[in-house]
Length: 106
Image (cartoon, rainbow, N blue to C red; front, side, top):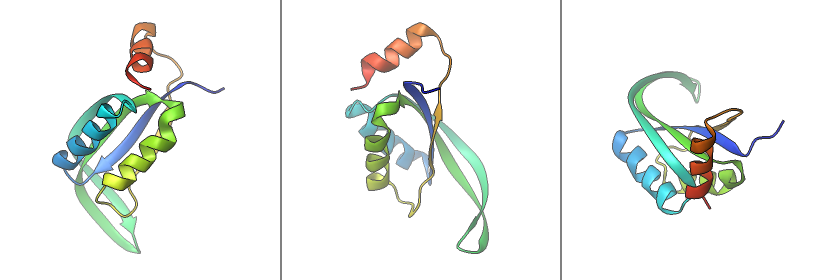
């Protein structure tokens, strides 16, 4: 089953970086809304080393068709070598809210 809407998870090094990336995406009408959650503690392995960092999570609400453009914009503006950019399908949602996502995105 394919859905027109996605929730995209992105982590950033700081709230400031998350806001900068979010405004780029919103101004270009690639996403309708971004929720920024900070701080979150991330535990991971990077280049063979165990790491623990405080990060900021962005929750982007967007149309699936915009994913490639969103990914390009994030990679261009992001400080990480390999940023987390994961899209999850939105399979159900309030009709008015989903229509708003469609209206606010190109």
